[in-house]
Image 1 (cartoon, helix red, strand yellow):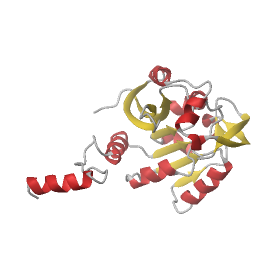
Image 2 (cartoon, rainbow, N blue to C red):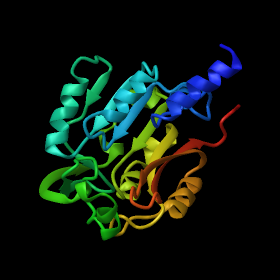
Image 3 (cartoon, one colour):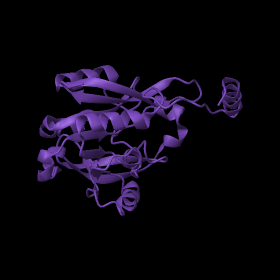
Image 4 (spheres, rainbow, N blue to C red):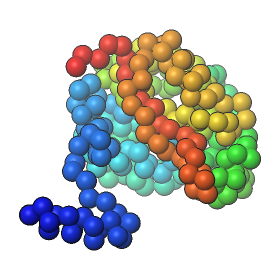
Length: 245
């Protein structure tokens, strides 16, 4: 394709609101995940706060072929998660439960958009940025420690632990002390300003991961206030020290 034709095609596409970019680690999330999973030899994805299985499905689309273990506390989302995993023999969905620091039972707030559901109360800063995330009901759900429910055969796996629990990450990590010693990488959703009552923000979460022996590897924007464009949450990926390059 000549330079002038390439420019014309690019201009025509950008006029529709899209962009044409050369695939690279700068432009492709798929490539970034593929490189990291390959580099670390990940063979078990633990998906905590799986909702309807969106992240696991994304990883499959990115070429990940290893085992998946998903956890989801919302009853409606858990039913959808079971459907998403039904045809995948290497994707296991745990019984409906929340993960936390201690075993017991807890009330979870169910959001209208499902994926903003949280054990923690939602603050106005979140609701004003995403009115569709308002809480519409509550459910009681069992709580377990990840260390107590992780299958024994996970001991020999190289784990990628993904947490999307809307501010409840510190509690989940507290109940996963042993699991973390076997974990190669952790993905956390972290807020830049308070969105849930009592949550820890990005600086505190980053410091806590550093203290557990993990270095920040990547940041992905995940939630913005669409009226202002302000970034509110990011997905941070942390890798166990050191990762050989």
